[in-house]
Image (tube, rainbow, N blue to C red; front, top):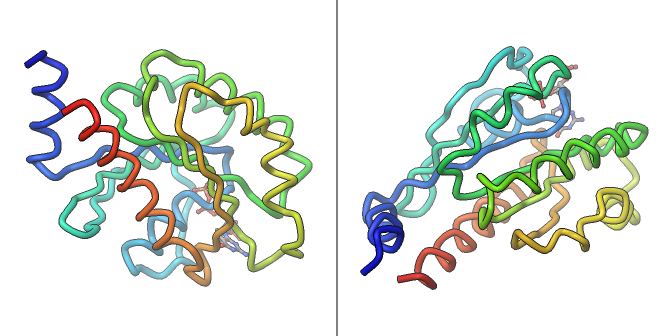
Length: 185
Ligand code: G3D
């Protein structure tokens, strides 16, 4: 059994997954984490560095790394890539004028070798505040999601405020990681 396979099996045995949550500032990353922890989502303050939260899901512990998305913090994102099992990229559905900036940042992140293999879930957050028709298609196209070939991708609309689709987001993420780890088992 190769070292990589052994490490992957150990990871599954430990039942912990490392999830990196990134996106532009103000997308709603911290709010989503708070919603997952059943905390008041109206009480967020900007994440100046990073915060790690442990979210129980099924029999797993998801260690979610919420890293600040301000321009000045983005060069530090790469310091968090190592050992990431899944990347959750959060998009602000109310800030479509920032999609080109968002795409440039996402392109740089997904092409980094240290994230190779990690599943990619794009969450289109704040759908409680927009007209829903075609929002997912718009974001999918603007971010060129269909051109990302080195990650298994999915895109889901959600709302940290209402909690809509957050359960679905977790279940997709966990299933993707499980499938990949077992595939190499
Ligand atoms: P960030 O961690 O990505 O920087 P935050 O984003 O979680 O700090 O959220 C940024 C702002 O978006 C906050 O508003 C927050 O309340 C709001 N927000 C987060 N999620 C949602 C959502 O699902 N729906 C709506 N309508 N707003 C959301 P403020 O006013 O504090 O800047």
